[in-house]
Image (tube, rainbow, N blue to C red):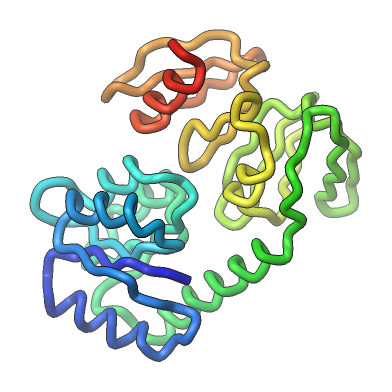
Length: 237
């Protein structure tokens, strides 16, 4: 897994690099001391994961994550625990407190490795809206036509699938689903949501340059600023 370390403190970057050096699954491809530089390197180098501080000069780590693609896993590494709720609202993969506990870091790397292995073993063939999807949640099973699914919502390492009056959880990443879906039908509106655009009832301008989507079932989904631009380009608005 290719990784970038983002932290304004040189010694903190060095300490984390030394801790990560023991894991053969992790390759540190770059470091950044601020969010602007990090964004450039992320767009250029396409890492699998970033290890990111929160409090930095200029943009915070949270603001950086709001701007990057949902395809990248984010592990926040910070001295402050009060940002944890916001971090997980942004679908952070994990949240580590400084000084980093080596055993806690080991758990994170193990989860990342399991996820990476799972992604590589997934069937990566594209899906059409007429395909049927087998969904199992506990003892309940469904065979659902893809076009009948209105929303995929990430919950940690699981995805909640919304169709009819059901919303089961499946052990799958939103990233793996996104790679198999047609973007013009199923659009990644944020790090947490993929929306079937056929189920959108209305769209209105929202705070910070984003959009607010209302689905036909009444559920409201916020479109991130970055994805708002991409959606407008995609739909030629």
